[in-house]
Structure formats: structure tokens, C-alpha cells
Length: 438
Figure 1: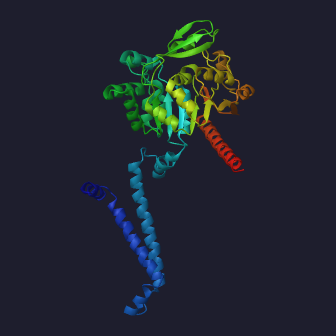
Figure 2: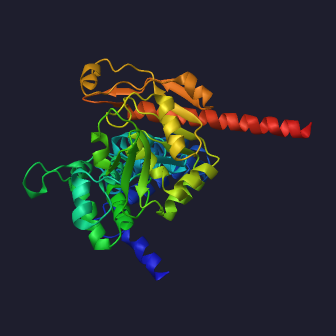
Figure 3: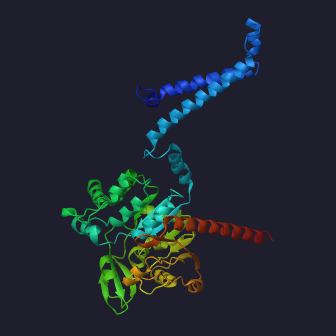
């Protein structure tokens, strides 16, 4: 009780700059109330009884007091909420109504689980956060190249790169802090390392736990949702090719000669456990999204964690695979959307309800990609139908220096698809009830 009283008294502490506006709003409220009573003749009768007829009609005086009082209340409350807004908002540019919208409306959004890695998953997350704060990103941690590979080798931590990309993508607002997490050193002993990777490594060392480091980073970036690693155990990827050759290491897989195709991807070790929060998120999901991202090195590795595949298989939520826009040299050369789905299901039969495929033509950068051996992914809609998977085709391109999904278009397409699916489910349940009654 004493603690609560102390907290309430803080509102009236010197320098808070709110006492004056609360007092002014109270004065305005009293003025409005008095004017209302005078205008309603409640006070006028007593005035006449005491002093006779006043020089100014009570109704006119009451109306004036109401107008003045209302103006004072609005002015005082406006200043009061301006002070609150500047204190509550994470960014000076953000209004209080936006903060309330983010924290209340988006908190009631759909529960989505997005599984993948690389730039593809972060692109998806950047669009989804405008619709819901209940996003769980499940990220592969098998990367052994670049900054992540160096930190894995030197510090023995899980690969932080894709986790950091997802944290930045789900950050509440564009800010200097967000840019800082993405900053990559260009020279010196830290060349090639991003600040975000080093920050996660430092937090892991301080907290003694990679998962705790992610949670602390999420709080600092005001992340909408949560980012979770697919497993807390160090893992490596091994690829077996059609010519019998075997390559170990995620960074080495795309460098293998393109004449041979990947037959199977596996984790070493194979029996690893996911965090409990991953399974809980999958069990409560309104929709499960796979991709976009590198098929063999970002999407499938998550599904090779046995408990994750089992949880997806058990879920009644719609499962949506977001197919890449372009093929990837060394991974998916010559593969269409149906080829992607067949390979994914061969590794983990989790079931897929919908496949999002791009129907837009990347005209501007087609020559650049063709020179690198990459081509637009063939939608293969008829083959998808033969696999009993609904192909959803639309233009989702964003062409800057790279051909990628547009975050807003992709998220809007997914939300529309989920809404359509939920409507279909409702109608099917209604039909089932009618049949049962008959």
C-alpha cells in the first residue's frame, strides 16, 4: 500500500510538468459544469431568488462558461498527452497513438510462426510486423561462413548472423540503434564482422546463454514478436549429391559444381533439441510460414530438427511455403516451385497447403542474374496442383540492386490468404454441422 502511494505521489513531483495541466483541466471542468447548470436554469432560479434578475441572462452566461471551460479542458489535456507521448514513445518521431496501436491492436493479431533464415526470412518479417506483434521467427543456426563462422570457431557460440537479421527486421522502428546492429566493419581486426553479431556474442558471454542474449537484444530493439534459434546445439550441414559426393559446411555447399544436384541435406549431429518456446509457438500458431530463403541451407535445416517437424505435422494451422523468386546457383539450379516443394517434403513430410509463387518478371536485373547463373523460378502451377498443393501466384517483386520479395506485398498476400483459409474453414465446419443435423 505504501509503495503504491509513493508511486502515485511521483505524478506530483517537482519538474514533472504535468501538475499545471491537470490543474488547468480541473478548472476547465468546473467552468464547463457551472455553465451547464446555469444554461439549464438550475442555478438561474437561485440567482434570481437571491439577487433578482441579473444584468446578463443566466443562459448566455452559462453558454459562455461552457465554451471557455471546454476549450480549457481540451487545451490542457492536449498538452498533458504531448508530455506523455514524448516520455512513452521510443522514438521522438512516434506519436502516442502509434505506440498505443503497436502495443494494443497489434498484440491482438494472428499468431504466426515463420521458419527459415538468411535475407529471405528477414524480408518476410519486415512486412508481417505491420499486421501483428505475435510473430515467432524460427531461425537456422548452421551458418559457418563470414562473421558468423569466425565467431562460431573462435568463441564456440551459435551462428548469430541470421538471428541478428531477424531481430533488426522485427525492430519497432527505423532508428540509429537498428542501423548500428546492421553496421559491418570494413577494415582493421574487426573487418567483416557486424556490430550486431559482436553484440550478441558479448551478451552470450555475459549471460552465459545464447537464448538469453537474444531476449535481451529483443528488449533493446523493441522487437515485435520473438526470434528463436531452431536448436541451441552447434550443428553443421552435410549435403549428398547425385554423383555420390559429400560436402560438409553451409558455406561450402553453394560452391559445389553445378553439374550435380543435391539429393539430401542432413544435420550433424542429427538428434538435436529445439527450445521449448519453438514447440509452444507451433502448437498455438494460426499459420505456419516456411521461407522464403535458401531451400537447402536456410529452410530445410530447421525441419531436420525432429521435434520441429513433428510439431508442424501435428498442427492444424495452414502451412504456407513462400517460394524464392530466383534460383540459386549451387543449390536450386533449374528447379521450379514444384521441385522445391518435392525436395522439402522428401526431407520432412510436414504437409503444405499453399505455395506462394511470383508471377512478376524481373526485367531490369534479368541480365545481371543470368550472368551469375540465376533464373526466375518457374511457378509450375499444374504440377503443384498434382501434388495437392494450392499454388497462389501474384507479383511480389521488389527490384533494387537485387531481385527479392517486396515485404509489404508479400505480407499483404499472406494475410489475405490466411483470411481466405479461415473463411473456408468456417464454411466447411458449418457445412459439417448442417450435415450432422440432417
